[in-house]
Image (cartoon, rainbow, N blue to C red; front, side):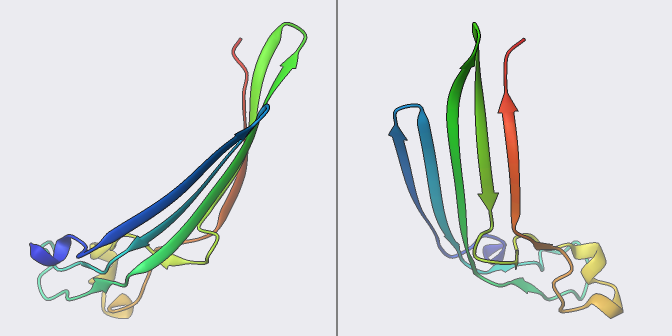
Length: 115
């Protein structure tokens, strides 16, 4: 059970507001995480430690009498890493000791406008 909890985590977050603009940047460092908590007998795998950087910028707008928020978000900017173990897949012989479910970089735009 001890290995199923990372020995360390650290987070640094910067939030900024300038006029109608808002920005958030978060840096996360996560320690190694054991994937051997008993779900799959004989599986001994540790998710390696990783560092992740996420960033978003948003702006509040008005269109007529309606307000709306537009946000651009980017996550995992430092590259691919495995966040969680996928025990059933990793127990298959062809996937043992491999990282089958890495978290990729993602960028997305969201618009929030109450109706």
